Length: 111
Image (tube, helix red, strand yellow):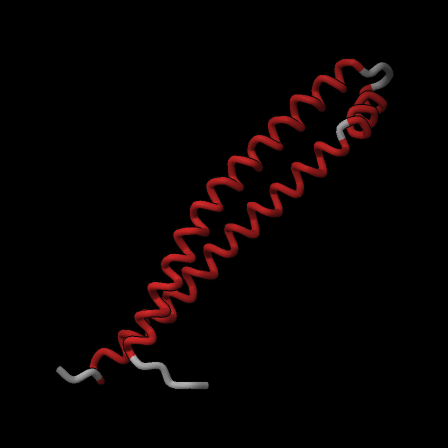
């Protein structure tokens, strides 16, 4: 592994900071999409449940079958939200590591 100098570490910190900012913006969009998909599924499921006939279990099964595509969309948006959250945590962890490296390099820099 190559040894980084302070300027390289600082440049990488700036690059990762930009990526973290973009990840935060993406996270907000994905959180909204996830909430919308969840609400849409719940409303449509309730409508289909109320329209269905039979026992509670039969009505539940009917509503699940009719709303399967909405449930899938809900799960996909949840997965995208979790991936965005993990990306943000990953950027923060990398930034923390670089800050530690930078702090260790600082005493080696002469004025």
